[in-house]
Length: 272
Image 1 (tube, rainbow, N blue to C red):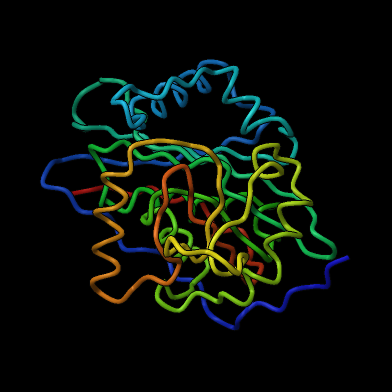
Image 2: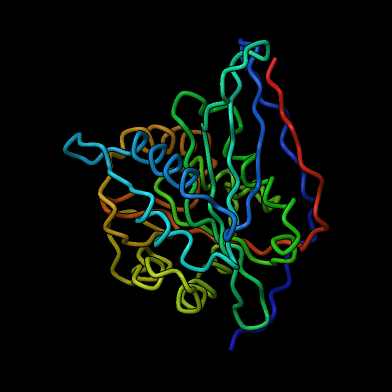
């Protein structure tokens, strides 16, 4: 059984407000798992489908039922945060869903895991801190505020960076020893099926790894990596990356120890 994790003594800092040339307004809504409606699941599935492409150029097809099975199989321990965009505050047009995050919680020995099971941001509003604020909004949820380890697997470096900000960590100085020590145990303790089946890859877990991976999982999620690789190159060129390369069918694996925090009040962000 794992022992309690001692997180770093670092403060958690909320990101700055996103900026935009339009009179747009982002607002965030948090919903506990057993209150997520079928309409909301359908909208999240459509957002996912419209923002992921297979290598052959075909859009990934996600359905509400499949999303429920993957991200809401344990609704009592799951929370959904959605980001909505109101383009013009003077109009009565219904706000557009432009991002969401499903997050789950479970026990790992004496520790409490908070896991980002799915994080999606509409490509039209990327680089507006939406992913960062989706994760920060999780702190509104009282049970989630008691976690002391956060983690995700993602093919997009920006998603890893958003989790870094949540943990008040440093993207270029991730604690690889911590990942190596706890990755297998966390995956084995997870109630999420795709994590149980994930195969740890990279030099942290394999003696004979030769593809440049350091901390990854083989999820067989063969989506187009063109944009993630561009972002990865940007981080690497600035010396702000230590998780290695992104191989086909793989996703980055990262976990961080954090300080449990008191729940914060809901935040409304407006872009001016």
